[in-house]
Structure formats: structure tokens, C-alpha cells
Amino acid sequence: MNWKQYESAYAPEEFRSLGHRVIDKLADYLKAAESRDMSVLSPVSPEQLLRDWQPDFPAQGKDLLPDLLQSVLDHSTHLHHPGYVGHQIAVPMPAATLLEMVNALLSNGMAVYEMGQIQTILEHRVVEYLAKVAGFESSSGGILTHGGTIGNLTALLAARQAGSGHDVWTEGQREPLSVLVSDQAHYCIARSAQLMGWGDQGAWRVKSNSRYRMDRQNLEKALVAAREAGRQVIAVVASCCSTATGSFDPLEETADFCQEHGLWLHVDGAHGASLLLSPRHRDKLKGIERADSLVWDLHKMMGLPAMNTVLLFQDGRRSYEAFAQEAGYLFASDTSEEQWFNLGTRTLECTKRGMGMTAYIMLQTLGTEWFELHVDRLMELTGMLEGMLQAADDFELACKPEANIVCFRHLPGAEMSVEEMNAHQAKLRRKVVDSGEYFLVQTRLGDELWLRTTLMNPLTEEEDLRGLLAALRGSAGSA
Ligand SMILES: Cc1ncc(COP(=O)(O)O)c(C=O)c1O
Image (tube, rainbow, N blue to C red):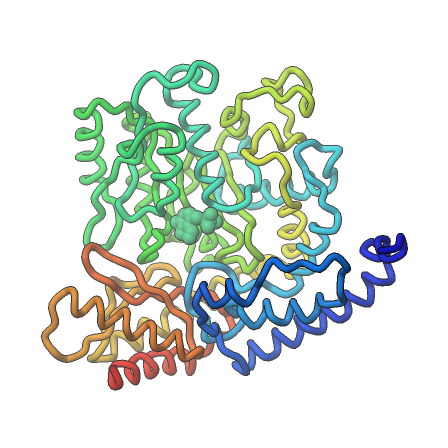
């Protein structure tokens, strides 16, 4: 290879022409997906894909990027297809994906201010804006993290430092700690507790009620039981909403409970906090302004590309306690001093993407009303599906949807055991997903398997939802 060939990877003109070809491909992908002119997913076994993609890298590069990209597009799950009603990941706004490309090109790592000046400021402003939307105090603060999982872990690290009664970060842990959390909570809460060395009782499960919510009575019982088992309870994690059914733990009564017992209230609003942007739906989060910390994924109901999460603290100073640690080469020696502009003092990660830049520019260019409409549209689609399911004799809802998550199952019209019924739902889902027309998922509620849709795609139409139910019925007929 000669020097010129080596240099071409950085050549601006090469970038420009490659960029045109790539953007053309992506625009074609968007067009085909949105017009339903491709499958949502073409299922292929992992073994087959592994065989197809060998690590046979040539010594001399080839002009293969657009072709390889096409293969990647072909084998991906196409969230922009209106038949995508699966997991909780946003269908990214195309313009926002361009901003992510800028983040990749600049790669300003952001651990310290001078390695991401504008990115730090825009993150700060996005945090400030969202804290205001949540009704937090003016002394609030926070950071952006790569996802709700890291956000939740960081919040619990701060809660641990605040609630354990000594400096756990420096001295290590003395008592076995626990947080009370619904049996419907996302698994990352239990994982965080276990990462912190609290064992499997670290996330002390509170039984959810018939609406899959925690309630005061069950919280009280759980607190007594945890204490009797010798646990030092430091916090409650409220799920707003829960992952499986989209149920909101009641925040007012949970906040009262925390206040009475001196516990930290963390709200895992990874999915549902975006409802705060809609005056029609924000009531579901009433009481959120009393939380000590809140996690909110902007890559769920706000249409931003994954990952983009805000972690807010009611008292911004708490944000410095999660990682009360020195990294002398990065930060000034006195880390107890607030260095709001050196974000690495407050994150698990050292290098991170300029997520605030993407969020800030999209908020500026689309305007806040766009986000309100977006949330309302997803909720409107949910209402449509709910209505269709309620009107149908051959489907039943697990519970009334509170967010854009709908759990339901097909009633085959014949007596079936729980196992047979579960197998029936799994088979219907498999057939529909294999058809490439729709992508939905499944979830377990107790022993039962339910079909689950998350209405993430604003381009989904009423007809698509009718089509989904027809496809499930058709699969049942041919099962
Ligand atoms: C309630 C809840 N919390 C946390 C998470 C994890 O978030 P992330 O995938 O951004 O790490 C999810 C993901 O679905 C979730 O639903």
C-alpha cells in the first residue's frame, strides 16, 4: 500500500463523495421502510449470519463500504417500517442521526471541559430544561449517560452515598443495603444492586397489585420484611413506567412513604418520563417533582437515536457523590468542589458522546411542541389498538395500557392449559414476525406469556394495527 492510499481514509473529498453515496442509501432505506416496501425484519439464524460474515479481512482495502452497508441494512430490524411495534427503542428522527454522525466525527470525549466545550454546555442546558419540565428545584442538576441502565446505577450509587450513614465510597460497605422496588421493575435495578455487592436481596421486591403497580400497602409490608431480614433500606425505586405492561407506580403516595421513612426516592422514568412533555398525559407522573433522582431515556419516546439518557438529581450536589473519587490526571486536585463543567467527575464512563448536542439541536430545530405531538401521537396509536382489542372477542388485554405499551393475547376459542396457551402465543408471534410484515415481542406476566407491542413508530397507521390483529388471527387459523 502506498502513502496516498493510506491517506485517503482522511481525505475530505473522499469523505464528501462517500457521504453522498451513504446518505443516498440511507434515504432509500427510509423510503422503502416507510412505504412498507421491505420486511420489518428478515429473520435469519445466528449460525447462518456467522457463516456469511467471515473475519477474512484483506490486506489491501476495497471500495466496499456502500455494498457492505447495504447488507447491514438488509439484515437489520427496520424500526422505520410502520409495522415495527416491538421494543421500546425510538424510531430515530433522520436529522438526529446526522447529528450523531457529527458526534462521531468530532469525538470530543467530554470527560473534561476542554475536551468537549460546546458539548458540555449543551448537555448542561438540556439537563436544565428537562429538570424544569419535571418540576425539579432550581438547585437541581444532573448529567447525560449512555442509557437508562447506567443512569439507574449512577442514581443508586448517589443514593447509597447519601443514605448508608457513612462514606461507602472510601470505606466500603458495612451493612447489607437494599432498595425497595416493584416486582415489575426493569432488570437493570437488580443488576445495579448486585453490581454494588448487595446480593440478590439488594433489590428487595415489592409485590405489584392487579394493575402491575406498587402500592402503599405492599411498600409498607416490604419495608417491614426487609428490615426483619436485617437489611438497611435506603431507597425506593418507582417504575414510571414498568417495562412489561407500561404501568406507572403512583408517585404521590410513594413520595409520602419515602418522606415518612426517610428514604431516597428514585424514579426510573426511562420509558415513561417523556409523558411529562404532554399536558394531556403528564398527570400519570404526578408527584415526580418530589423525587430525589430521575432517569429519563430520550431514546425512547422522544425520537432520539440510542443512547441518550438524562439523570436528574433534585439536589444537584448529589450528582458529585456517586463517584467521590479522584482521578488526578483529569480533574483538579480538590474533587469535592463542584466542577459542573468537568463531567467525568460524575459519570461512570470516562469518554462519552455529545448526546446533549443532539438533544439540544433537535429541541431547537423542531421546537418543544413537536415533542408534545410526538408523545400524543404514540399515545393515540395506543388508544386505537386498545379500542380494537377491547372490541374483539378473540383477544384480551392484560391490563389497561397507561403508556404506549400494550400487552394482550389471542384467545383461541378452545380450552387450553397455561402451557398450551403460552405456546399458542409464542407460535403466533413467531409466524407474524417471520412474515416480515410486523415486529412485536412477548413478555411473561407470572406464569403466562403475553404478546406485547410498544407503539414507537409515529408512521404506524390505524390500518397497520388492524392488519397486525388480522395477521395474528390468520396465523391462529393456520396454526
Ligand atoms: C423502565 C426501564 N428502565 C431501564 C431500562 C434500560 O434502559 P436502557 O436500555 O436505556 O439501558 C429500560 C429499557 O427498556 C426500561 O424499560
